[in-house]
Length: 135
Figure 1 (cartoon, rainbow, N blue to C red):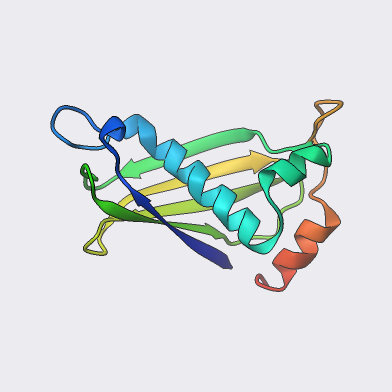
Figure 2: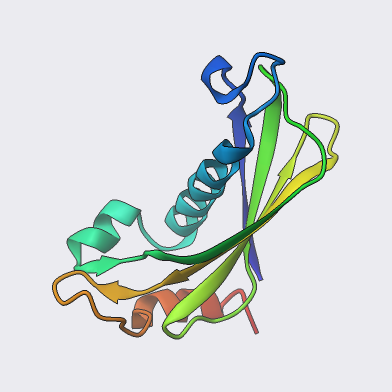
């Protein structure tokens, strides 16, 4: 398993009139976390796309436990537990400033050839790096 934590401060534009983060913003937090995670052990999304690989979302699921509030510094913990082949699952857990789990999400991404639009296997170097962390 490999994990990475990203800090994010809830800004005014993320919230409704009650100062609560709008539920539709959580998938954006998942994306922020996963781009930081992948950059931390492999390379940036920009580099991946320049190499002709795109990573479209195939599915997403979210559980909302407690709200995040305006100006709160939250932690996005992003985890990959399995070695991917063509698709892979990323788990996101979001914690409030008190360390309470407030949201959990699961996103499944697929590797796709940018030129053909067809699914492809995970790049060998991506898999090799993950093997160091996942047995």
